[in-house]
Image (cartoon, rainbow, N blue to C red; front, side):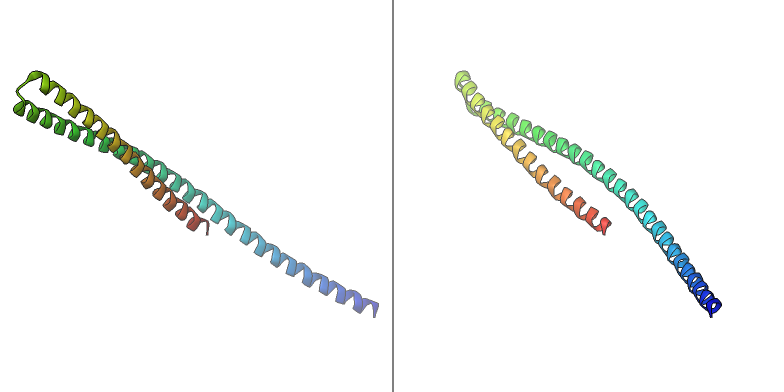
Length: 141
């Protein structure tokens, strides 16, 4: 009877050992899968970071080009206005005063445009950052 009890305990013990080995293998496999997923997320995160950096660079270049184009436009308009003033006002002193006032107005308008462009770009960057954050949240899921 004692021997049967020992045999039963030995069989149970062996069964538990096999069960534990199976669980260990499952945990090991799950751990490898999670590590692979983590590695994939790291790669995706780096790709997102690189994309965000390139976007920021492109955004800065676009802003500079936009400001340059607006500046050239305003200069052409100012030159045209000055030419029209020269053509319509004959008195040199009066022409000088009108040209100075016009150029002052153009400078003020240019400053307002620059401020407006900066605000628009900030809003664009915020929207892009929000999109990047949403993409990162999707990647995390």
